Structures are given as C-alpha cells and as structure tokens.
Length: 492
Image: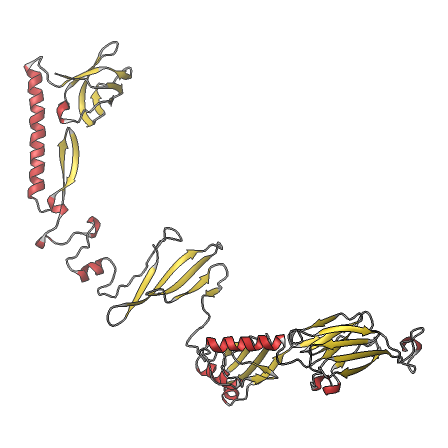
C-alpha cells in the first residue's frame, strides 16, 4: 500500500512535503518505512522520524537535492514477511510507550509532565498532578501560576501584598496604554456608612495636548458633582490647580485689614480670602470682596489685596503681635487706575479727570467716562456731563481742580479761569501769560499777543480738569452692577 499525496523535496536528511499530511492517522506513515522518489534516477530513502504533516527526517542524505518530485511511501510492505514484522514491531513499541505515559498521567499525584506520541510526533503534556492540586496535595507554586498557599493571608504574603487587607508594596509599577486609556491609574473610593460611593480620587501620569508631562491628582464626585484636579508639570515643577482655594479657607465677615490677616495667620494662611464687610475701606478705596494673596515667613506676614471693581491694590504687613493687636501696616499702591500724569509731567491722584487739548480734543479716564469737551471760541472750552469740580484737597480743594501747562522752568504758560454753570458743566477759559521779571528767554512773549489775551491751550500740552461725576455716571453704574452681582453670588 502506498501513500503518494502531494509532492516531495529532499535536501540532505530533511524531506519537505507540499500538499501532504504525513501525521494524519489515515496516512499510516511512520518511522522505518521506505520512500521511493520518482526522480531520474529513482532514489530510495528510509523514514527516521515524522516531524509534522509536511516534514520528515530521512536517511541517507539526498544527493543531489530533490524538489517537486512525485513519490510513494510503502506504508504496508507486502513484499516480505520481514517487512511486515518490522511494521508490527514499530506499532507495538509506540502502543506500549503511549499506554505507559497515559497510565502515569491518570494515576500520579506528583507535579510532573509526561510525553506521548500522537501521529508519530512526540507531545509533552502536564500530568493530572500538575494540572490540579487537591486537598492535602498542597498549593500550586507561584512558578506554576499559583500563590504557593492555601489561605488568603498566605497568598497575599507570598505575592508580596502583605498579610492583611492593608496591601503594601515595596515597589508598584502602573503602566498606561495611552493618555486616553483608563489603565495605569491608582484609584481610591470613599463611601458613607451605608456603603454608597461619595467620591473617587485618581492619581496618574499623563501627557496633555500642550505636549507637557504632568503628575495629576483628580477628584470626582459620585455623580460628577465634584471635578477638581491638582497637577505637577514635569518641565518646570509648576503646580496647576482647577481651584486655588487652598486649605480650609472661608470668607471673613471682619472689616479690618489686621483682623483679616490675623484670621489667616491663626488658620495657617488659609482663612479670610476676601472680606464681605463693606467697612473695609483703605485710602478711599473700598476693598470689600477683594481677593488677597497671603504670605508668611516665620512670625512675619504680608498680604496683597486687589479691588475687583477698579484693579486698585493695597499691601499690608506686620508680625504676629502687631497683626493680632489690629495694627497692620498698610500701603496703597499707585498705578494707572488711580493716578494721572498732569500737564507738567507729574503723577497726581487722578479720578475722575478730563484732559483738555488745544483744539477741543479730550481724554477721559474710567471714572470720568461720559464727559465731553467742546471748544466754543479762542481759549474757551465747555466740559459737560459732570457736576462741577471735585473738591479733592490734593488738587487744591474746590477751586483748585486744574493743572495747567508750564515751561522748562516750571513757569505757567497760561492764565486759567472757569465758570460752573447751573447744569454742572464747567466753562474753562485760558489766557496768554508772560513773565516780565524773568530773563528774556523765559518771558513767554509772543508777537502780537499781550499778557491776558485769550489764547488756546498750547498745542503740545493739555489742561487737566478734576470733575465731580453724577451718581448715575457710567463708572458708578458699573461699580454698583459689580457689587450687586457679588452680593447675589454670595446669597445675600
């Protein structure tokens, strides 16, 4: 009987089949059989072992190498009694080996593997004793995929997880598949007494869309009622928080700067982020609701306060005893929101100020917004939208709310007069001014113009007019709207 399915190639002692299945039970192909290759000349080989459905080891080595040849395997040697005896001997040998191996597989309790021959190919499989450890046989070793213990406590200990429910690690490595994956995240859950989840806290490394790496602590409420994070940026160590309310901070009802600072001092710098009291007025600026930064070094504290309505700022400082005693040092900061540069180039308290230029052009600041200026005639300018002059003593009181241009010797270049009309508008009048007692170069003499003649404001300078604004001015309305929004936001 012949097996001649497919073709064969022989290179050295290796035979490779194409379209063959030498390990199929029906093929009856086994070691010791003869292969006849229909080459020119015909070559004969003996099978040493069947390695797979398409590979065998043969002897002798092919010379020359063969490929794509028709062949035939004598699976049943009817030529002689000796050939039949050899085939039967091979079958009995394989049978005995397999029966012995399967007997060991079924009866042993030892932790071992056995080898059987299937379709002429040796296969190693674990015995029953290795597949399952039962009762007194002991625990499956860690090396074999077990825990090496028969109790939960022993298993945790053997796996390096501690001996109790409080798991401990000497090293723990969590890897994230990618930045959007839910893997590699250390999560802790908080529950109430009934077992209902209150919130989750997650700790993980991530790379965000800005290309920077972060270490993030993320807190979520059970129903997304809370969503806060705190991140440490790897590139510069910057801390990024979704909310800057650090510690146990709360709003203070105290209206004194020193009291607010003392609240923050005794609460570790976490209290009195802003004052709700309308009485927190410093240097004419109301710092109610003003956010503040608090700094502490030893027994010395300082704070920076910023008025949310105007941007005006104040700093305060002191030590433990002075602050606790209500004696903080306070310093108002001057800036573009509360100062103006007058016609002589000096900074003065500003608001509300209107700058009047030669041709009737004008500039207002935030507080004087709404005022207008019209040039009526030579040296006459009408300022409207106000209620007369502001009586600030820093500008000379009710009759001193002006700054006029000067020369390099600080001599006035013009005379100034004014009238306040019944509607609150201010008529500003300017006149030429000479200095006959001064040296010739400083007398401010102009050909054809005498001292006291009406003239326009010098073209490269301006007159500053500090006015009083009505209660319904644009600036005052904005302030009231901001205060109302803040009050509503606080539920008052």
